[in-house]
Image (cartoon, rainbow, N blue to C red):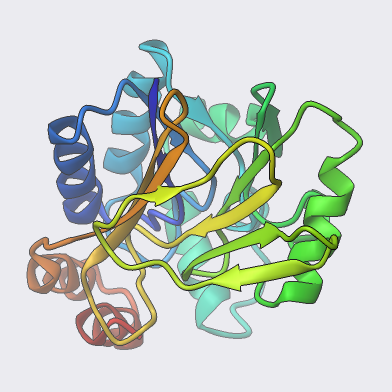
Length: 250
């Protein structure tokens, strides 16, 4: 089975459609959305409509920290994130907010474990951005002895870690479009990047494709019309910073 792993869409419908089309062309048979479906972008309701429809066809969907703050935004807009959360909350239909509230924080697929942030205390939204943090997350996943792969998002970067022969976690820098053998005799942790908010200076969308039968993981970068997505942010009256960040991939 080929499982497409998409995270941090952030209300970016243009990037979502591009990644879905790319994944289908790569033979994806199932989709998993690892949280932060909303926030920052201009089309939260349309993104949720798309993902909710995919869920009825078997897609797996997790809740991220941006869903959490969108469901209960701060009363006062103390910073840009508060302003964006308030606006996103106002754009969603009641049934969409109810759906978000029911989403789980993790999903256990046997050998595969899905989470938005870290397996250790997923509700605290820890950033898995170092070998130390990756070790803590992977160690927590060993509560499920069958787990060999942990896939998450949250950090907006594409990274891969594996546990070496002596038990130490080793980082591996993936190359876009190059399939990486991830044999089951090791333990692996990957952050799959951001569909709608890349922050490495490259505005191309990110996702990953896991071929479980062949034990191959491929990280992808996908061109999409990020200028149109940025223009939608401006037309919606959202902070200019959100549009500029999207155009710069920062």
